[in-house]
Length: 145
Image (spheres, helix red, strand yellow):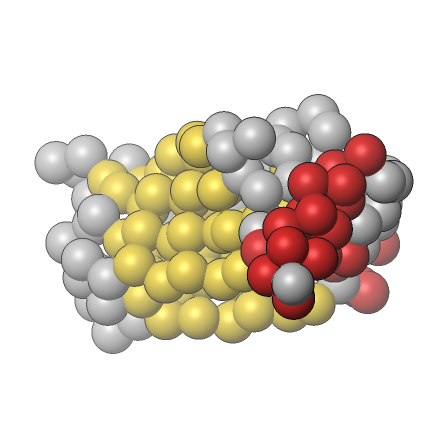
């Protein structure tokens, strides 16, 4: 009897707007992956915000701040509920070549609905060419509807 009630509720639930049970089964989260493909450590300053229309300066002043150091070959994953991750920016990434000194890179603001969607994975890959001064950030979005 109890199992039938649960199954019935799960079948009915998609027809209901905002059904919380679906979030329990498949939480509405967006993932950020930071991948260091370079030959040196990378120091990353990233901001995440809950307003997809926020200007870059507002996002860096009010957003959730992440200051991370990625070792060579390291990947870090950050997951936030969709309503908390509406905009993201790499404000500064430093390639730590000699004594922590090296080239820098950043990204523009990525916004929910324009650049990514809820449940997607945003991947920031840090790398450089043979010329170490040619340091960059490749941004890709893995769609997960």
